[in-house]
Amino acid sequence: MIQPAANPAPGFKKAPRSRIVTRPAGVRVRVMVGGEVIADSRAAIEMKEGDYPGVFYIPRQDVRMARLARASHTTYCPFKGHASYSSILNGPENAVWSYEQPYDEMLGIKDLLAFYPNKVDSISASRD
Image (cartoon, rainbow, N blue to C red):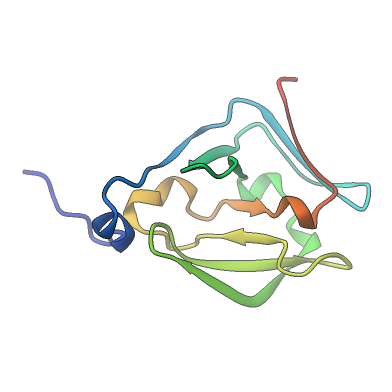
């Protein structure tokens, strides 16, 4: 017997044709801020959501967490849940977000970090 989801996303119930796809990125992802590598990962997850550009979610162990400061800012997505934010020390505010308790359908991004491309110098993906 299939167990019902304990924490289902209301967005999928209201818009069942909506699709969010997560998969291993299969590339090395680097995030640069002020000429400094803030994140460097070969274990990133890429999320594709509708017609939006893909977003890389990076494991915390691949991010220089000491360069981040938790922010009070939060947002909500009916498909993913509540997002918490961090600012980059001596850098842009609310530049990083994470879903620490996502809905069941999005558990693949739980506790991973994503960076706003317009708040960092670059987010690059390469096959090296």
